[in-house]
Image (cartoon, rainbow, N blue to C red; front, side, top):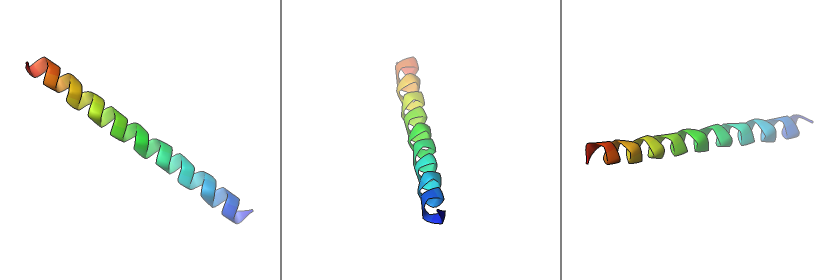
Length: 36
């Protein structure tokens, strides 16, 4: 059971990291468009 809980936690962490990375790139793209 413990290993299953750990794997679920790591998956949530990965999802959160991907979301942050996606948001960061989105902001960069918007900033470049606004700068031009």
